[in-house]
Image (cartoon, rainbow, N blue to C red; front, side, top):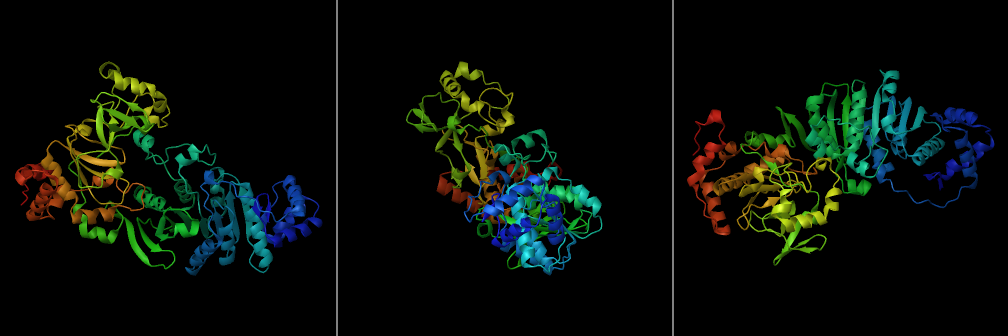
Length: 588
């Protein structure tokens, strides 16, 4: 049955019918509910009282379709999982006096807490969605009607946006009580909520203090659950107690990464991996983030299976290095250093309908199925992450229009030198104007990013940032022009093919793969980033490979891809990748 779009049990419905027959006002009703069940302000006002009284008298068993809750990042924790989680905390002798559920939803964590923690004196639940407020209250009534002898703490369920709730007030009121923060914050990012025009957002701020370009191009995008978790740690880190929140794995990784600078007073940090598909029917990697408050700051996290409690690995900070697998990292840590070449991201244009083309005889076809003729000078071969499957690539299925040779370059030259291309771009200008990223504001028409001298290097060694394949690709010129990559790819550019091939062999070595696996997170949105790739010390990798192995790999590539590479440039390569202060070192 449903009332106010909230599920209500027959037991609660019958109770409320009888209750209203013996209660004349909402003030009296609130006092009775507080006395019987411990719930503060069950009715917010007289209108709530009258509406519920009317509704229970005419309630039917007809179901109401659940509304779309994507705006709130709403993945409700089922009762069984919430109970298992609370029970596991209870078995670890966690005995809270104060329960805080920052986004209580339908109240399953509150019910699980009432059931498993008999020491609770006060419960605080916050929820923005009014039907869930009612469902939580109904569930609490149902629980105590079924368990009348259980401990009845004082319960406050607050209807408001979590970002407007004053948690500091709770902190001040209860500075010494044992605390448990438990729940499941929204699993969406600020950009996702922004695209939905949601009001369920914190005040706009660059809360990680990213620099301007990073904040504009993606690093400033954050998970709402991460914001909520850090907000709670800010307030309650010095309180005695624990925090246990279900969040995406990326949130836990980010918190541990930021812990080096933030130094939150949290210890015994653990990540309990859950089966998100089974529990929430979503393909998102998520876990229980657990930590003890008011502790000496810890900078590492143990990863366990939630169901078996078997330890899987540990990740975090080790000697100023952030590592995804501490045990495996020790086997390859000598590779961790500074890459002598700068890794770059590929082209960002955000206008694939117009900028990306396929060649058809002497014409090009865009994603709008328009067939056009263009000058060849600004057309380059183009690779995306999904194209980087082979070890060597010298032909592409797609082409891209490159309108600039450096960021911010004036593009008016196109009209005079390449009129066909200019007319084509101008005829589709609405697509460029629709680009949402602020990086294009105030920039010349048809601007692109991720472009510079490095983009026009003839030879590139590249890897996809998105895929979980620890495999690097050699990208050769096509039609005597360098091939471009999109912004999901990372690459190093070279003028000499020999340097590119030597680098490729070093990066595809098994030792390099082992090292990368120890510092990358396979469930990350981008497995590889510039920060990760810049840690590859090529000089130290050469020390793990024999000259015989290098020669064997060169011969393999020569035979398979019709190359003509030898080791005649090896000493020059070693000299190039050797830091200035260590030039006296000789390899082989």
